[in-house]
Length: 215
Image (cartoon, rainbow, N blue to C red):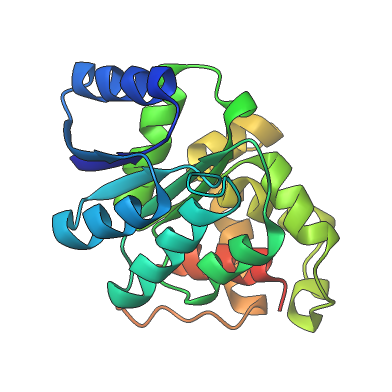
């Protein structure tokens, strides 16, 4: 994959570059400020980008705003936000276009290299990779959704793990259920959420976006 890394802290940025190259990926460019991030995202058009939220010049939300701006100009541009903070409003805005290709992890929740690279690859493929803590924050501030209210408690569990980016097999292992049982649950979820298989959209991504947007 061709990857852009936008992180202002030298040690963390350099560490990610070395890690990604060790896994056989190409770091096409790095950025250390919000404006620079937007520029490299638009000029490089990477397969996926890792973007910090708070970057110079003001150390507020420059990185996240650059990611949003880039996604508006290049719909579906895959972005993995890696931050110390959950910015709920911006996170919802990232999810709102329904295009997928979005991840949001807290830095403190990334425990090993395989986990990080796997999340990047899922996002690059148009999927989602959401930190459980981010999911909890989004759901705690969400509004009621009648379609989501139709889901059983088990279906909520399955959909939450799907939001993390887990496959049916991995969800089954986490919930101690067979893969076929998870498949039945996902089919039921798609039906209750009104998500049809039209051949153009990834139903798993649409279900997850409905769940996270809670709208």
